[in-house]
Image (cartoon, rainbow, N blue to C red; front, top):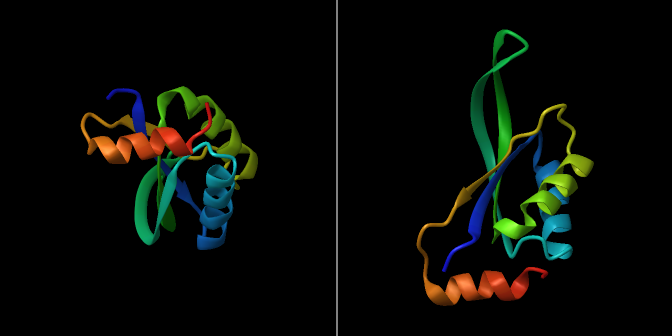
Length: 106
């Protein structure tokens, strides 16, 4: 089965990640969200190395919904340039992928 994705979004706080996750699941843009409560990110921002504690949101969905997912995240996110990236699911348990398909809007 093709067309399934995992979407990564880093957030400033657990509250922000929960708000975004609840919205994405509630609007059936994603079937599932996992929240990793504390990660340490090192990145370049405006020409300087920055180091921040962040929260990682991992969502499972379908590629055809990525634009809607991205729009929803941008609407709710506090960052000027939020990380919103999707990776294709190359293989997965067929019943799990069917569940993702069933739980996400058409």
